[in-house]
Length: 372
Ligand SMILES: Nc1ncnc2c1ncn2[C@@H]1O[C@H](COP(=O)(O)OP(=O)(O)OP(=O)(O)O)[C@@H](O)[C@H]1O
Image (cartoon, rainbow, N blue to C red; front, side):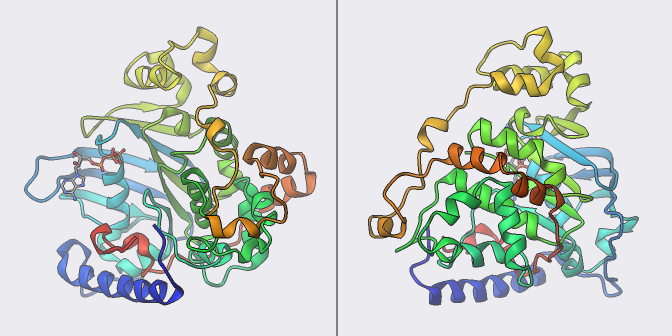
């Protein structure tokens, strides 16, 4: 999964830029209008007005969708795999364009602004894991080259990884991949969230941010989502309602259409598709009447699936010496220690400096062009 050397990382970065440019030229939807303006984002209000969309030559995916996400709001898209969540997020990034209607950010039609300025204003935590054979610090900094070390520490505290990273012999300078640490899938997701935190966008997109993260850790991250992204408009997609239940507003997708909307409580009361998804999410048990309206308590009963397998950072054989001691570092212990540390807690609450997702970020490069 990791590149063999820094040279390859450099070459891949270069290819990323190249592919983006190629893509921009070839994909009509991504071409800037001749008079395209620079997107200026102040509030981060996202609006979909009467939006319909279908992939080229395929049946319509979304039909006449209206959505308004207010500044600082968290809106979730939840639905089974293939229900269309990522496609909606892709519309915002102009990875594809709507066939009807408009997508607006702060009242500016995103098809009338430059793709570069659009993407510079949107922080992304994509589904794909894109990591370089480089230090942990530099991998997070990829989201924003001007971000200070201190901001990176704060982001890692927020996702419960700071203690774990600090316990490595080379700390944040530890190499990821060959000859270094090989974080588990869940840890990589949390590092990806840390990347999103240090990114710049007033609008943040999180696509399955906590897949492969154990439920307990997921709950702690999501509970603090507003503290993680203060003042930013967040769109979060997941096929697990547990990931999205904290959102201010939830869109429920089924068979590539929005079938329900509302808050967690209202959707649970309705007893529709969301209720059914949630019921399956809690280990197949129907929620009790108390659980129906009480998300935090519901989480308390949630099985800590996968927690047992997250014992320590899986390290390559050559890298075990990077640990200061051979005592395994337990993820949950680390998290507890930091949650109980008021200084770190405050740091999490008060965090947030801005950075910019560069338009050549690998998130925007087609997966077929990646070498990972
Ligand atoms: N580039 C594409 N071309 C054609 N069809 C596509 C393309 N990308 C996605 N689709 C189809 O669009 C539908 C919605 O896919 P999408 O990725 O938006 O779903 P999703 O809810 O995000 O799924 P998941 O949770 O698995 O990521 C699926 O039927 C998928 O096969």
